[in-house]
Picture 1 (tube, rainbow, N blue to C red):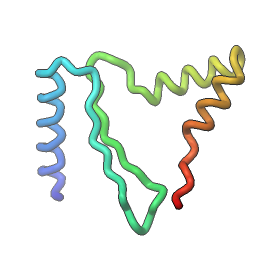
Picture 2: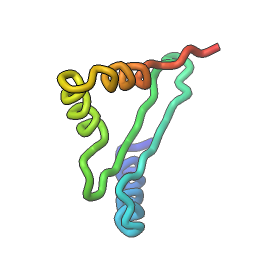
Picture 3: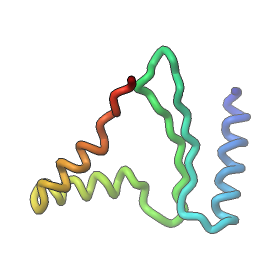
Picture 4: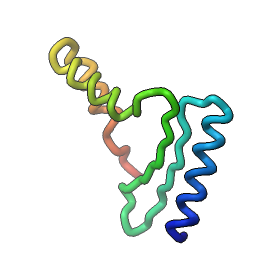
Length: 83
């Protein structure tokens, strides 16, 4: 895919997100045989903070106030075993 095509696709997704008054939209790509633990995500955030920033702030808060939340975030962040 050319850089221009990728930008046009992203611009289209941004327009759709704004027109739908959606808070988020994501493009998720996986299935890279040479890198089975790699997933790529392109995200659009419309009027809200990006989730990775919110999660980072929650993690910092939980380290002080609720270690059980830290353990749960760590658990949910782990890549599941493939079998």
